[in-house]
Image (cartoon, rainbow, N blue to C red):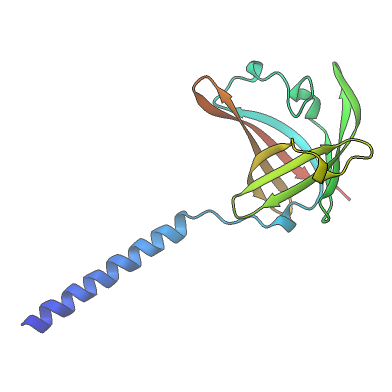
Amino acid sequence: MKKIVFIMALAISALTIQSCSTQNAASTPATVRRGSVVGNWVLNDITFEGIPAQAVRGLFGENSYACFTGSTWNLTNSGNGSYTLTGGTGCASGTQNIFWSASPADQTFQFKKLMEGQKAKDIADGYRLILVSADKQSMVLKSPIEYGSATANVVLNFTRAAK
């Protein structure tokens, strides 16, 4: 009788452990690889989570977040890159060199602006974004900002540029 109770308890324990590990594996998001970020991208759409659009004045040192809509981003495997703003109403056009990196371990994308003659190691300031997803066709980055007593996000939606 004791053997039957012991075997039943062992079977129930095994089933419980198996069901818990299955749930954890299903709820873990897929890790984005750094190589998925490399390439040419177009920033097609900027949306907002937890903040009204009119509350966001600038983005990455530019006067308006709208200046980035339609911008192209070139992210090389070496970490060197650039983004090009198309210009328009209240927006300057031009190319900004950057040094970027992506960390799949903590799901971040970060970059530093490089001015003529500067090296990335000499620049302390930069931008850190959440790398939500990146695949062959699209990439989503979130820029967290403080709004009131909470954290809100500016969401950058990219598509891979045509070759």
